Image 1 (spheres, rainbow, N blue to C red):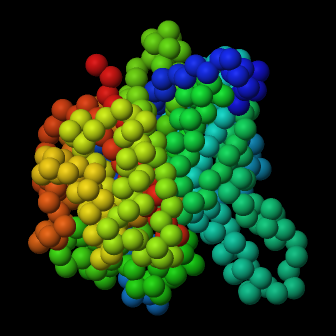
Image 2 (cartoon, rainbow, N blue to C red):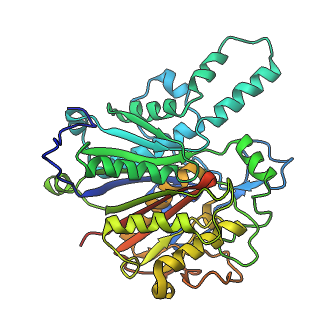
Image 3 (spheres, rainbow, N blue to C red):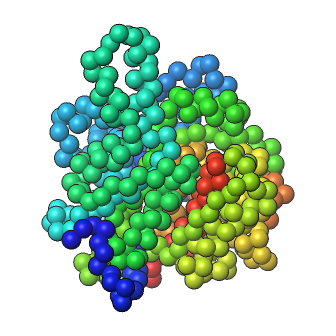
Amino acid sequence: MSSLSNENSPSDRREYRVVITGAGIITSMGTGWRANADGFREGRQALREITVFDASRQRVQRAGEVVFDAPLPENQLTERQLSRLDRASKLLIYAGSEALKQSGWTEEMLAEEPVSICLGTSAGAMAIGEDYYQQKVEEPTRQRGLMENVILYQPSTQGRFLADALGMQGQISIITNACASGANAIGDAFRWIKKGRARRALAGGYDALAQMVFAGFDALQALSTTTPRPFDAQRDGLALGEGAGLVTLERYEDAVARGATILAEVVGYGSSTDLHHLTQPQPQGDAALRSMNMACEEAGVTAREVQYINSHGTGTPLNDVAEGMAIQRWAGDWTPKVMVSSTKASIGHLLGGAGAVEAVICLLALNEGFVPPTTTIRTLDPVCTFDLVREPRDAELDCVLTNSFGFGGANATLVMRRLP
């Protein structure tokens, strides 16, 4: 049977509960669940001097660069494929391998029914394109070997590397929707399973640091020249980061039947588009509010039931105000009770990977009983009428929400619950 089956006839409109049974994460905070859980619990900042390219001519030379401190996980790639892996593909394999291992999905399960993959990215294979350009500049007449780089210059190749590495045979979908991409990917996979079009899926997002992307953000003067301070009155911009976050999703009944450990249930997904301006959100957060309302309506929850919001919180002057206004309008008189933080202060903005990585951070918080603080704040912006968590805080969480809002007006919201 196809991984995206049409098994539901018009007379069979059953909807399935969808749960997460595995999660993988790699960020500048560290590799894997444990390193990231410990770092985010403490609110550690993991920004460092950039080494993957020469940033000396930029205003800013720091970012959330990943340190590969562990060998590439065991995988099914050939020697030729391994030799062609770019940085972004390696990030995917680290996160995907951890998610698959934690899920308990066996080779027999993967062979029984193909598992679909849904990935979100913004920069995608940009670094491969940069390498091609640099080689052509240095050796204008060279042809041999360069066409391989051209072939690899598409995100679907990175998805294929991941599928081959993990032995997955289902369809591969790539979403490129700015900073909402990773959350969109998890949301789409959630819908596949909920609507009966798939039993299992691997979903998430990724992005690697790329010089052209970094230079573009620097030219826009969107990068902080000090340190990112989301929701601070004197914030001056964001930091860029890199990494990957992937989750395994499946039907609740299947997970229970095989005795799997359930990390959370995905209960709501919302998306919207803000047409106000290419890079500036509507000041009152209209589209952001629509995304949050849509997700909560599907989840059947109100602001009083959502204990924690992992905000988009980039640290840019306009974005934080718009999101803050959306949260106020969404929560109403309950706003002071809602805990909010931005983990971009710790690892930077992962662009297309941000929404997925932050969804995994929410899983860390749900399962380990803490709220990741934003420790770089000095003076609160007046828009912060919610409970902005600035110091490490233990908390038994049952329901969390994560926002991802991007350039071009792309918005996505996910709501997840911890099962009893």
